[in-house]
Length: 519
Image (cartoon, rainbow, N blue to C red; front, side, top):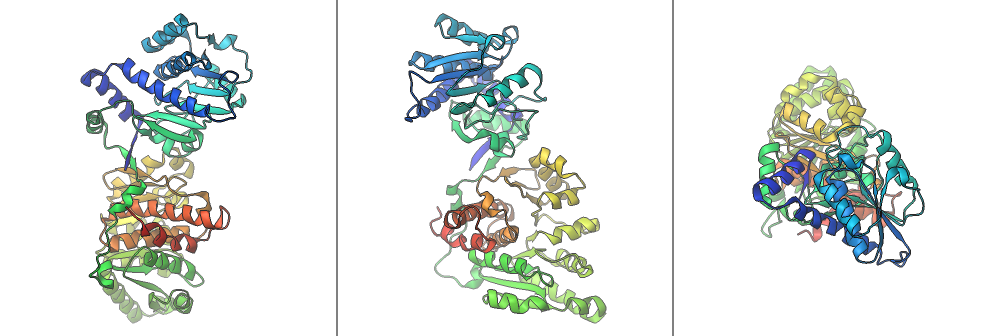
């Protein structure tokens, strides 16, 4: 697990380290600059670059981010690189640290240019040090001109200091315009703004440099500003419960999939397949009668529980029997999936209500299950702490009553707000999926590929989460791990099928391979 720092948390880590621990800011700055300089040196190990011919330009703002970049330029110049500094900010507004870096550069005769006297030309490596994580307003005027100029320079390599200038440190939003980096060298912890989109796209490869922040500073920041977000890593797969030798199918739990409408058997099949592939001991599928043959032929291992949707709507006795059956199956299940392909016919509301009111085990609500709840908000009254919802942006918009654009502006905040309001776990699906628990703790997923953007991929995710719960994993961690595992499986499928050719069932089929050599 790796921590992600928000803007306020990182500022507190900086403050506490300097003021309370007593590590001088210039010491941290030198270490940060050294990490950036080392990344530039690695670039020059490529035969495409020539140390004596290719130029390096550090574009610096007037704050400490600019000071980091200026110090990196100085280190490179002292090693014989053709490095110079362009001051994008105004000298009179420079911080004390930035003024000191400019003084040192002057004494060492390292070229320092003001923006007004700079003539854009060829530049091999750009070091972006205009803004750090504190940017809170739209980039305009002189700084907008500088960033646009940097993006037009077509440098062979652009290396951002801490975060690409113009990217919001908390939300990843583009604040009017932003530098497009190939590599971002960040300090202490990766920033939220580089983990979520669009900031993630602008950041390129993110490299986290240890510059000496003690763990005590992180703990202090969490006490003052709240728990830091995090991302899972491959070593975290070791958290998935092991499979004991002395066991039977009951050892690994029972998953109930309540899914599929007429002509929508695929969603139920994919969710059930994923649950089996991820290790569930027994999977039952409750679906309309029309889907029975299709699912039995596709997945004979699944236990079928079919019903006549028309009858349960027309016949009260049939409806009562159906309600008792749902209650019985829910009580026997270790985890329940509600919604994939369920449809939005009137019986869908009845099914959703019966499941939500009967289930004692964790329930993962997806797709049409979410649409039914959005259309019938009174169903949120059945939410309990063991509910996990897995909406994409459109479904979240309907659930929360917000525009998609508003949700995209701060994905983590939207997920956290809904999760805290209803005391549930919210898996908000996007290119960088965010998981928020009922206390608002955030994880951001960094596995996966655009090859997974296919119909049925979400159905596979629900099955994976359910299987992890059935095998004994806590529902919140199962949600986080399921998202991460889903992404790893997508990556593996893309390796075999290519970025265009992956189908949802192929994502599910990779689960066994990914888990085979888990930590």
